[in-house]
Length: 136
Image 1 (tube, rainbow, N blue to C red):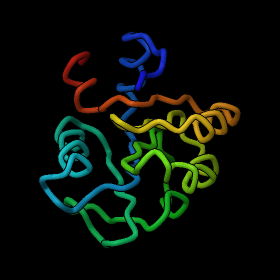
Image 2 (image 1 turned 135 degrees about the vertical axis):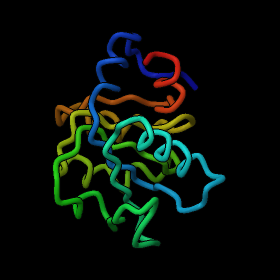
Image 3 (image 1 turned 30 degrees about the vertical axis):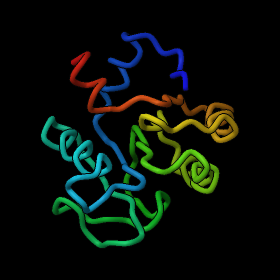
Image 4 (image 1 turned 180 degrees about the vertical axis):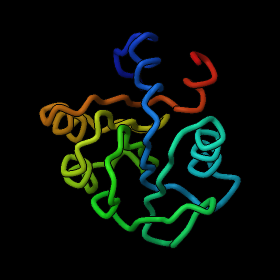
């Protein structure tokens, strides 16, 4: 699976955005959907969990849907299987983040095109933790 065509400079600019909502954030420490957002929190990001199965993760209020998040977000970071991205894309578009970031192994061309056509930049098949460690 390929990654998007962003340059290192473009990814660096995206990583400077600090308000991140994480769809599919996990309460289980061993999962990437937990330790990646935890790393982001530890590195100055304002992380908002989005997961309908729990009320709080890492002492942060957890929201059921991205559209339930009451504040603006710069990046919607997605930890859902590629085939599930279609079911969340309308909510992401309504939230109007600057970027939708699909984590490593996640790629959904149809959803990505809908996001881009709505003015949302799309990063796919990249890990925010790995890119932050590599570039920042």
